[in-house]
Image: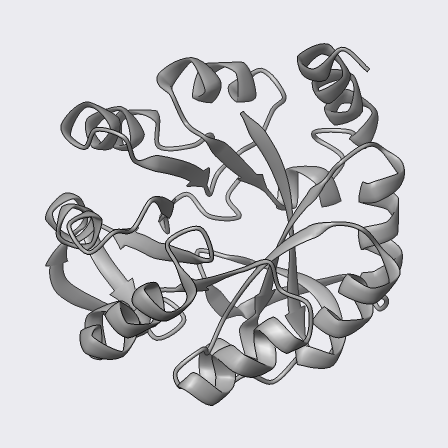
Length: 244
C-alpha cells in the first residue's frame, strides 16, 4: 500500500482543516516546500497536494506551490482543488502534477471530466469521492449532492476510472480513525478499483489494517502534523515493504 502524505494549501501555507470546515484552519508551516522535502528525506515518494483556495474559488490558485515542490523534489504529486476547466488542468500538469484529482466536476460537469479521462488517460486522472453520510460532497465539501458514493464510483469505473480517493468527511481531520466499514463495502462491491483511503487516520496501527482491506494507498494528514504518526515510522514501513 502506498503512503501518501497530504499538504493542504491556503494562502501558500501548509494548513489542515477539520471536516473540511475552513473556519477550523490551522497553519502548520508557512513553507510547504520545506514540508515536502522532509517527506522526501524519509523515503516517501508520493504527495497529495490540495489547493484549498482553488476548491473555494473553483479555479486553480496555488499552482506556484505545486511548481516549486515538483521542481525541487522527486515526489510524485497528485493535485486537486478547484480544477474546473481544461485550462486549469493544463496549468496543473505543466506545473508538475503527475496526476490530478477531480471531485465536484465529476458531478457537476460529467462530460468535461469524462473528456479528461479520454484525453489524459486513466492513470493520470483520479476520481475524488468525498462522502458525507455516504452521499458525494462537492464544492470543497461545502455542499452535499444526491449521488451515493458506491454507484458514483461504479459509473465512473465504466468510463475507465481506476484510481479513487474516498474521504469520509465526518472523519477528516478528527484523528478518530478511518472509515474501515465504508472502504470494506466499496472494495467488496467494486472489483479492480485502486482505492485510496483518506480521512481520520490517527495512529500507525491503522495503516496495516487498511492495507489488509485492499486499499491501494492511504492519505495521511493531520496525524503527521500533530505527531501521532512519525515520519520515522513511515520510513520504516516503506523500508519493510521495499526491502531497501
